[in-house]
Length: 243
Image 1 (spheres, rainbow, N blue to C red):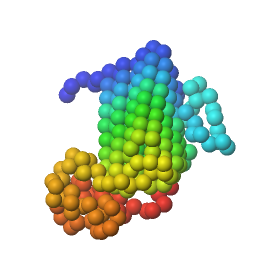
Image 2: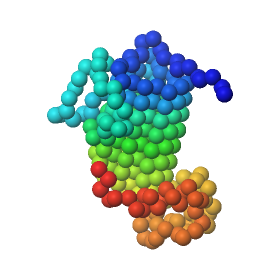
Image 3: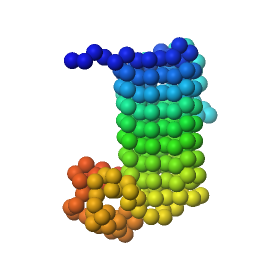
């Protein structure tokens, strides 16, 4: 068995009570992580990143979290932050703690400079948030979604799996799975064929899935890789009011 990879934490970083780190994480200068927060393995957390500060709730508590904080499991306690593994969280990103569920960032995400993940947000695996993306509280971003620079998502929004949201978009409510969406307010302009091909679909399968993506047909019975079929069926069966 290989030895555990050490965490490399810059001496100016601040880690409060209740912060649990896995292995092989890099935490840059002046980063602040306060508890309760659980961080997985192999994450790159850049300079001036803040994780676990109180949610922007006018009536909520604002404790001096870097001097003391609850030390329970954030996932079980319904607050705090849970971060998976192998994420790249670039400088000046902020991730706030949850108020009724843990704010969660999955695995293999790329969060670019200056992005904001608000309280009670769920960001699933392999999501890309470009520079200055703002996710309002209670938003859910499903796997493989890609949000362009300066995208703003209203609180309680939902971004479907594999969706591509163009830069500068303002999302008021929901973006469908594997759509291309752009504008203010954001509107669907097409099917994310590139995203579907990256998930293993050939041209015929993309064409067969197209009507469902556009909201004009049912999911095809076959032709989808098993993992993708499971994902889009979960999206299709989701409660329409997730929060």
